[in-house]
Image 1 (spheres, one colour):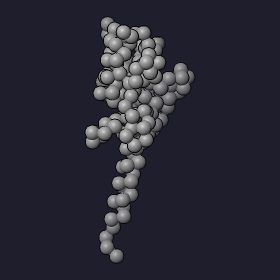
Image 2 (image 1 turned 30 degrees about the vertical axis):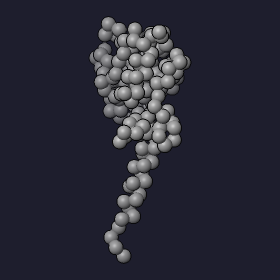
Image 3 (image 1 turned 90 degrees about the vertical axis):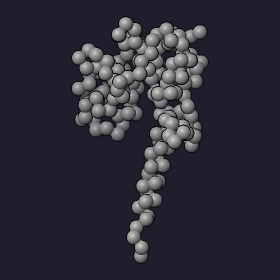
Image 4 (image 1 turned 30 degrees about the horizontal axis):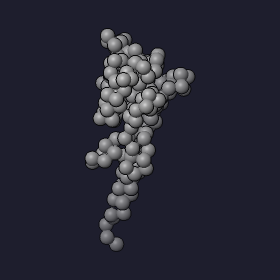
Length: 162
């Protein structure tokens, strides 16, 4: 049985909740990571993914783009449990916490290397990135946005009669 501690990544890159999205993106690039733990007054308050900040102004504080509270898991949990938790919560990573301290991070890629498929697949394009359940079906955020854009453009055509 493989435990989360056996496949998690460490150390976890952390930023304060007051840093800007631009500064957070610089940290992600500098450490070549996609996720950051977010703290306030030395307390874990959230987590942010590179994709979560793509539509946020680089001048805004990262706290406006973070997911809070973060979903955490214990290092002794199984990788299967971690995969189930990720699918159910529709997140791409879990912060690993022991005795109140962040000791690692486990992402979908970590679980895949451990031989577990942590991801749902988009019903439209079969993508595994940023899949969410919408109206009972798994869809990636790109397909959901395209559907919303299509609905918006259809409603534009509903003008008043000639």
